[in-house]
Image (tube, rainbow, N blue to C red; front, side, top):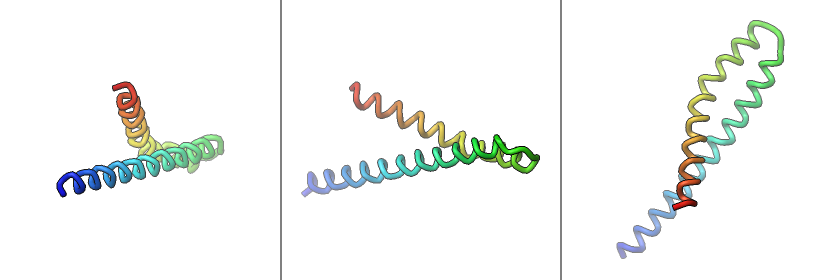
Length: 77
């Protein structure tokens, strides 16, 4: 019984982590595309929006780098 519960919990946790990681990567991709679009538009408002997108992009880049490091570590060891 304990083994079944532990296996199920591990599986659910793994799937949830993979889903959250996928959402974070897709959000990062969307924000980077928006930043690229706004950085090429002339105007003060577009420049402010481009700088404001960094507030969301920087933490997502950190999550992306941490995810890549963990996946590489998982494969190697």
